[in-house]
Length: 480
Image (cartoon, rainbow, N blue to C red; front, side):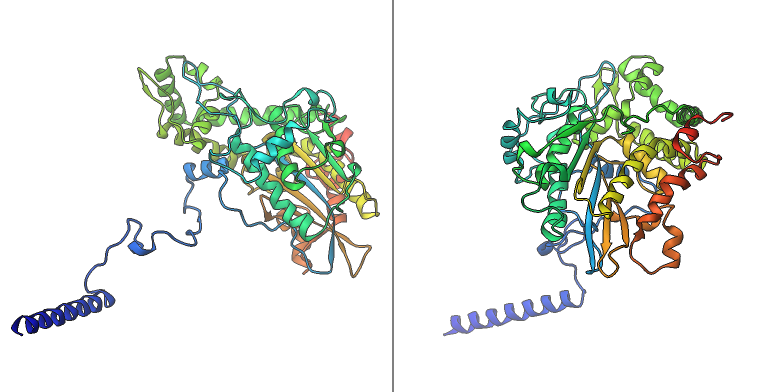
């Protein structure tokens, strides 16, 4: 009996202590166990991750992560957003190729060991990756413009070749294609189920990484497409200038821009010191190291989480990376201020923009050809277009960047057509130089097509500060 009473007393005392403990925790009078990030131990696995916010100042590592564009959860995008009475008429997509192996090697160091085969159990992965490989194996007889037919349709080397597209790059564009499929095909029915060859316009440079990126996006957009309906055109120039590539004044702008870059580099003592330290590590002259463009290889190490190279003299490290990346950011800032690059960009981007508005005008007239256009290109393609459009705050094109022009018809006024421009899913229409003023005067959510046409056919030449009224005269004017 006595034992039973003692047991009941202890049980009551334990209950009282538990109640007091919970009460003190509720009123924050004693600490509770927390995770390192400050969350309670029960909520470490969060259903929704914290939103990624930009650091308060310029952070070279943050900028590099954005450049890598490592595939993760599906991103939010503004493509295809319009009032209900608007109809989508045509879409024009410019992409930079996906993640690639470096184009340059840091002298006297081992190449980063990156596997360029496509493997299902390796990250990053996409549910359509295996099906993509299977479909590419069926495309050996595809009809492409020469010399594209000699290029492999997907990357397949256990040790990547220089400049080769990686599995990350394929996944990036499978994601891009699937996102555009959900918006443009499933939601807006841009193409019918029985679409034909002439409803697509596909163009790529002669690099395997651009052809393969274009095919990955196309497969995400049109899974298991009929190879007989696919025709990729070859573009010899990274500017996609077709038969209008000879432009002496554009080249003069480029020479002045390169001179500006050189002078800025000379002024950066911290950059020169970093190059000097790296040159000693790999035991080559500083000039030779600089010529090897080491940031290209370092970005590959960074994006793939591979250690920077070491020698018996030491290791290239994160501080060297920060210094070079910081200089790149400063170079972009000065480039916007000096505006020498703008002259190059206006003349460099004019041919491809002129082709695009031509297609838009034909679509606005009711023509059904080339409803969906895809240009698989490079950073040196997208960067001039962004600058020419007046998108001065746009970041340098990341891997698998996409720039999209949408053409819409107003259902209430069928003769009126409008455009939207989106960069990596963000609507930048009213940041363009040809639509900023219109946005201030009109409540309409899009920009009139005629604004873009007038900009390309007239205002681009006015922005050059010359009396030229056409591309040829602007390219050949005297006394520049």
